[in-house]
Amino acid sequence: MNRPLISRRALLLSSAAVAACTRPKAQRFLGYCFVANRDSRSIGVVDLTRFRTRLQIPLDAAPSQVLACPKTTRAYVLAAANGTVYEIEAGLLKITRRVRAGNAAVAMRLSRDGKALWVLYRDPAGLVEIPFDTMRPGRHIRLAAPPVDFDLSRETDDACVVASGARTIAVVSLAQASLSRTIHADAEPCIARFRGDGSQIITGSQTDRSLTIYDVPTGKTVVRLPLSIAPREFCFTADGGHLYVTGDGMDAVVSVFPYRTEVWETLLAGHAPGVMAIAESERPPAYLLVANPDADRVTVLDVETGNLVALVQVGSGPRQIVITPDNEYALVLNEKSGDMAVIRIFSLSGNQAGGNRVRRYKSAPLFTMIAVGEGPVSAAVVALI
Image 1 (spheres, one colour):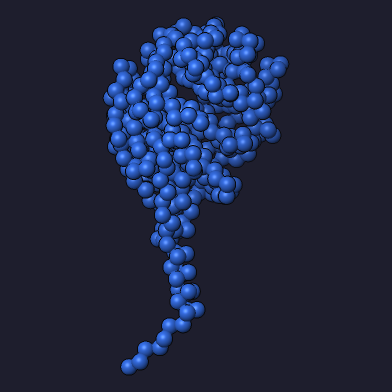
Image 2 (tube, rainbow, N blue to C red; image 1 turned 60 degrees about the horizontal axis):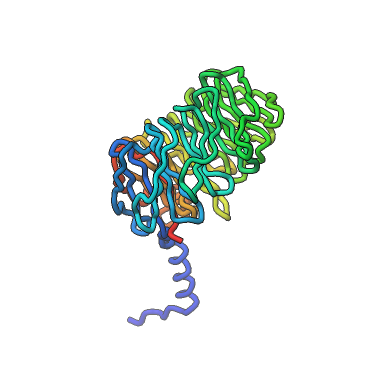
């Protein structure tokens, strides 16, 4: 029996169809993810080219926060309980320098020019500069009340510091190392962030279930926005034009337009939504990833439409979500189970082979799971440049 010959055109078409359904090979990221393991007092080093933990760097105190210094191979770790900042060189995978400028810290942020850290101390109450060139305390700005949160402007040399007990937001000039003004809030503030252009401060109050926006130059109230939740977490898009808020009260994310000073909509986002992260690439769609700690899950929404894209089961108690600089992966720290769930951003679209389950059942797969240590609470990615 003679079988019909397959034409060249049919062969090319069939090859194209197979290629279209083939899942593109996952790209590895040349760098490390440094994970602060609070309970084991260590920094877990995850090799992102192989997606496995390479080693643990022991510390003499429990780490609470990790920051990467852009355009370098260094990461900085804060141990809030004793106020110490550690420098880790990714090329050496060891602690190279350390500094302590107070007894107890709250948090740290990278300066606008990328040349220093600003560390907020609770004991004694103050804002301290740690220049990278010396790794010694620099400018020190005293505060009148114990702080709970702070932010640095991306456009001006200003900081804002929240003191919940005193119901104040202090506006600080970093250039002059002095207090510019103190804003007395009607409702107890718990969190504050600068608007993208630095001209306004957005604060959240859990007791009042509201957002209040203040004018930086005058300290006057611009608007108070009632919310359906008690705000706890803020997440901005890269351009600062869209703010998402989560907190107690509803299984939802509140969408806010800072430049219009208005609440836009409330989006269902799984049970008890917590921390968030946004994955934005050069091409749409952009995704809002929302952790659901009580459900051991991440809920993914489309930033443009607000629609549910996917649900991803991760480890126990997701605490932080970090997007790799290439926007290829979301790294989810699971505080209770001591591991990191890796989500491939491409898999959320449902366009890969076998993606019907994502499109139909809104269930996206994990790329891998990595054991990182006991009680992971913060992470940062450092590229090997």
